[in-house]
Image 1 (cartoon, each protein chain N blue to C red):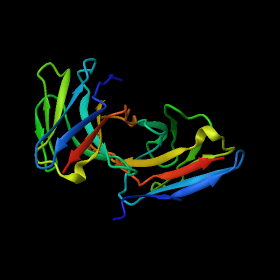
Image 2 (cartoon, rainbow over the protein chains, first blue to last red):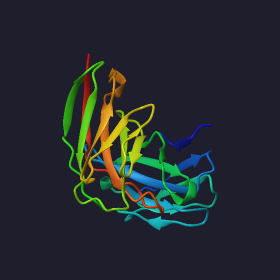
Image 3 (spheres, rainbow over the protein chains, first blue to last red):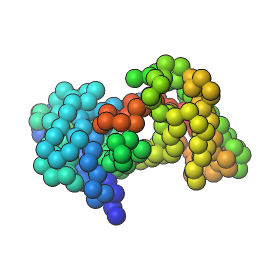
Image 4 (cartoon, rainbow over the protein chains, first blue to last red):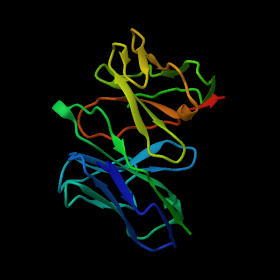
Amino acid sequence: NAGVTQTPKFRVLKTGQSMTLLCAQDMNHEYMYWYRQDPGMGLRLIHYSVGEGTTAKGEVPDGYNVSRLKKQNFLLGLESAAPSQTSVYFCASSYPPSGKLDEQFFGPGTRLTVL
Amino acid sequence: DAKTTQPPSMDCAEGRAANLPCNHSTISGNEYVYWYRQIHSQGPQYIIHGLKNNETNEMASLIITEDRKSSTLILPHATLRDTAVYYCIPHSGGGADGLTFGKGTHLIIQP
């Protein structure tokens, strides 16, 4: 199993450009999450999904959109990138047995710089 | 969400036990205490979690005080690869809420 993978690993954008980050998991997990991590800070939740076709806002959703068309994929989009979105983006997934969240599995991260 | 207080940094000698404290005095009765760690530039990694009883797995032990207002993560024989930022995270364990990460404790294992 590859676990949680993220594409791309690095990206540099100019202000106003758009891009999509891809997260894929091969563990048949129902729940998927997008976080961002700024220097010296903990992770903050952007959006999450409890299943195929569903998405919900997290703590810092502004400036981002997401889609979960397939169970194994969770896409994070930036329609018009801003320097404030320079960050490391982590995707995670989990499948709560018996409705209990035991563990989130994280991807390796995408380092995004917006100039 | 419950607030947590962790020391910003700690040192530990290689081979010794590393004891990482966390205060979570506002934890709710249905919230578990989760511990994750993040090795430099990598995604966070789950370590252990518990509700009120002490827990142990192959990575660590978790000691939760009887009033549940604080806990201690114990790495019994720290190695250089245990150098990381450790996060203590109260969480209900149910639903799909994301984890709330604070700044954590930067544990540095000294050779």
